[in-house]
Structures are given as C-alpha cells and as structure tokens.
Length: 307
Image (cartoon, rainbow, N blue to C red; front, side):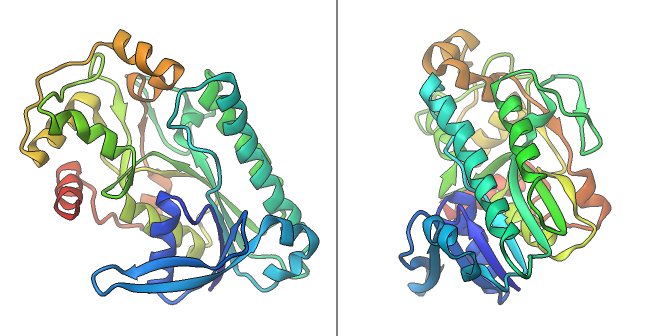
C-alpha cells in the first residue's frame, strides 16, 4: 500500500512508519517541512531509511503530490503532556482541528481518493469513571476539557471525504523511547514509587507495538470503521499498574502520592492520572485482532528489557 502519514515524527508515528516499512508499504510523510525524513529501520545494524516528505504548504498549492495513496494515517496534534494554561488548551484543540481539516481539504481535491483514513482520537470521548466500563458502543460524554477536544476532533474527522474513516481512540501507549511511561518510571527508579491518589482509577494501556499493529490492521481490514479503541484488552487500576511497574524495575511500591499534590504540581493536567477510564477494544477483538502483549506484566518486562 502507498500510505501518507502525518504526525510521523512523534512517538507513535515513528514506530508506525518502521512497522509499515518492514511489511513493504510505500510511505510519504506529511509535515511542516518538505525535507526528507530519516528513520532508523534497523537500530542494531545502524540502518537508516530516508523517506519522501511533503509539506502542508505544498499540498495546499498542489494536492496531486499525494495522488495515488491508498490510505492516510493522521496522528498530528500538539502534546497534551504539559500544564494546561489557556494558551496550551487553545494550541491542543486548534492543532487537531487544523490538521484534520487540512486532511479533509487535500483529499477533497484529489481525483482518486484513498479508501481509508485513520485519524487520531482519544479515549477521553467516554468521560471518566471508577465503576463504568466502556467500549465502542458507549455514548460520547463531554464532561471536561479533554472530552470536549476529542468530541470536536471526531466531528472534524467525520468530514473527511474518504470511503472509510477510522477514529482511533488512543489510550495510554507504553514504550521504552517515549510516551507517558518514562516519567511514570522515574519515582520508582528513585525508590519513591507508589499509588497516585486513591489508586482505584483505571488505566487503559497498550504496548506501542500493538498500537502500530492495530493501526495497520485498521488500514487493511474493511470492517474497521468509525470509533476504534486503541487500548489493550486488560486495563488495570493505578495501584495495580504501579505494583507491576515496581516489580518490573525491581523497586518497591509503597510511597503514595496524595491527589492534592498532583493537582498543585500539574493543575488541570492531573486529571489524566487522577480520574480513570476502563476502556475495552471490543471492535478489534471482534474482528480478530490478536494482541502480542495482552498482559501488563509481559508488556512492562519487554519494555524494561529494551530500555
């Protein structure tokens, strides 16, 4: 397949491009720059692959630069892992709406439109709860900043004129070289790890290898459409996650962090760890997707061994 990837220089995007290259896909990177993108396709052997890149500005002037693509994966958007000032909130929302709108505009002007677009989204669409369980049949609930962002993001994705739209509701993605796990490991490495807040809040996680395999599955499988939960099949509570992380690192898990301290340090961003969601990948499982790392202990041992 010939696939355009926007957001390909980020944590998930880099892993995705390597995965797609390894299976023989032809990749075009869409970014702010038209300079070729270098990807380490074999870090052990020091192998680097240079990929063709086109800029959003070039596509605005000449969308035919992407003529002939079979699919587009759009993972672009400003990071949410920072203090949510009013300016940061504006950038988080506008970056997602802008790039999704640009994807819609470019595809709308192509003579031959791609069959599938996998557009980033978030599991925040369901709201938060310590008791409820969510899958793709659960209704959207706009109850806070993140859920309102995801709601508007998905509505923008619905306007992309492609035959099949997948809205990938990404959970907590775990990997050795990026994402949320590295800062989560730090207290344990300092022998100061423990539950956060009550510890009862759910963490719906997925190994980065399963994340990119799921994206490829969505590209290939005509039955994958609409909202798709990018989470593993076995969510855990914050306390359970910390205990497994501690065991994986050979560190204790006995220093609880009070909720007020997190709110003081991170402001509204603290909602990501203090309020949880038990989100299940029902659609992926129903259509036969197999997780390499369905168990948290297996996933973290793999990541720690690599890291």
